Length: 162
Image 1 (cartoon, rainbow, N blue to C red):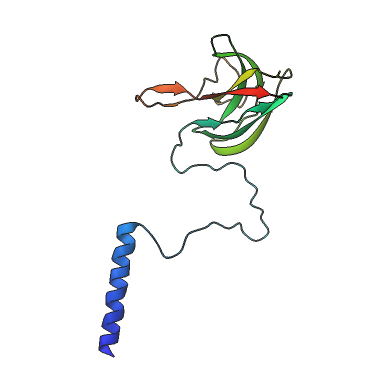
Image 2 (tube, rainbow, N blue to C red):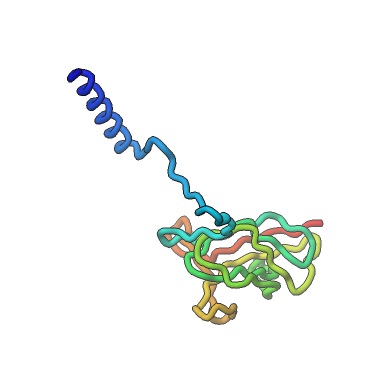
């Protein structure tokens, strides 16, 4: 009987050392909504400050665009800009409402005018100055680290097609 107990103890110790060394546990941890609650949140606040990011696919001609996903390090906005001849952000065509810090997806933004086939638009992140209202002069563009260690404005240029 003592030998069986020692074998079990040794196996548990080996398993524990393996789990610690690989960072794996025996069961995945999942969060479930409490009874009666719905899991409908579209944003996920991060435990640490996330990097600012935006992703958007080619858009169809129309009076709105859809941002596939975004991550904001602080509350902010997504602005849709016309594109200048130099392929830089031009006039603002539309703006999201105030978005919380964290990640979100499928943000539809209404535009002041319909886009045209062959046109390009730029979706750009702006950080809120704290008043909850977009102001292009005080809600500065969000930045993120680039490959050279500097900072660059977070934006995505996309084409508009029929």
